[in-house]
Image: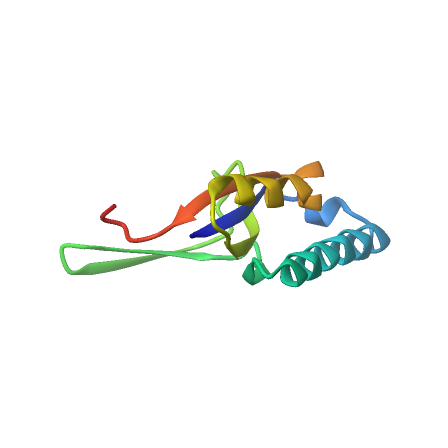
Length: 115
């Protein structure tokens, strides 16, 4: 089964780090990603930028709203898509994620929206 680990950060957290701290954090996340790959459970992973656009379509009208979104208390800063057999395996992977020290890890099953 597929699970996504979402890295949920506080906005501005990345800009508060020194370059050295940011490089250290980035390397820890790369090492974690490599470990998941060696275990054979990593499908893909990536960091997400904080700039964004929201799109919604209502009654034939498309609205685009440019971010960043000031009302947001948190942002999804990245993700790991895993292919594991059970939720407990996904949870074990999340426990090892270095980002759990400065962010929250949200574990979500991936599947059809009708289930």
